[in-house]
Amino acid sequence: MNIDSTGRGPSPRPSLTASAGRTFGTVPPTVLVLLGIVSVQAGSALAKNLFSAVGSFGTVSLRLFFAAAVLMLLWRPSLRMSRRAWTVVLGYGVILGSMNLCFYLALARIPLGIAVTVEFLGPLTVALAGSRRWLDALWVALAAGGVVLLMEGRGDLNLVGFLFALAAGTCWGLYVLVGAALGRHTTEGNGLALGMAVAALVAVPFGVADSGTALVQPWVLVAGLGVALLSSVVPYSLDLEALRRIPPRVFGILMSLEPAMAALIGLIVLRESLRWAQWIAVLCVVAASAGAARGTRPEV
Image (cartoon, rainbow, N blue to C red; front, side):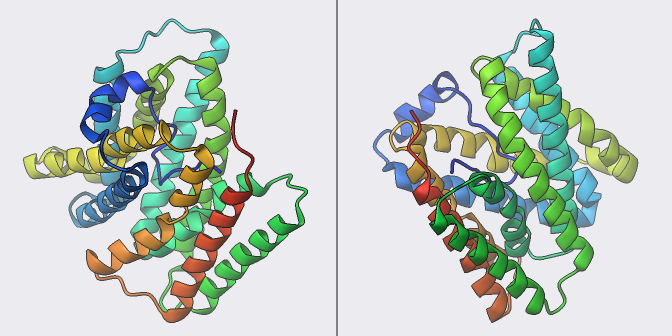
């Protein structure tokens, strides 16, 4: 199960991260994946701290705008593509933008660890869909048990936030499927850059309408760039270098640590404490994701 963190998407091709490969060539690939996970969740924590200034819409618009700008500068993609390729790019961008909007709306209402845990159900469902292995039924049951525990131990868990996280997870599941098509119909990082630009076009109007001129405060722009770098550019580079040296199956197992890391960073950085039942729920989803990834056949 080759899945990644909230809004990261398929990683660019090696030419984008050749310098990163030289820089991190001596670092073990497992460490690179873990650093990528920490970077993404640190970006989410930084984003949540921006909510008081520009709201969730403003924050996600800044993230996608700067991520698109960086990727467009790096790849300088050609606009000459087939109609089919453009259809995939547009679909990818709309799903990416919707996923980020829903996730940040969830993040404004519920703890980071719970938001990522619920969102993780989307790609997990895609990974398990159509499976005929009896063991995968165990992973489904374990993930379902995690959701039940989240709701049973909800405390002050906001239902609207939970539903937004579930919507983000649904978008993530669709994103995994469309992301595979993007790789087939575009070359290198061209589709990724254009798709990110489409996502920015989806999100930015919401941010401008909601936050207005607050978005152009110098410190807000710097923080928005930081969110984009931590949540997109840095993880892309680290994940790709790791994927060059470990099988996708192993990568998927390591990525299963994402909900637990989100909960830990939420606790340390944002001081978001979870109840014991919610911690067990997070671990249930982590175990289900790791089990599903372990059972995935190696890609060829």
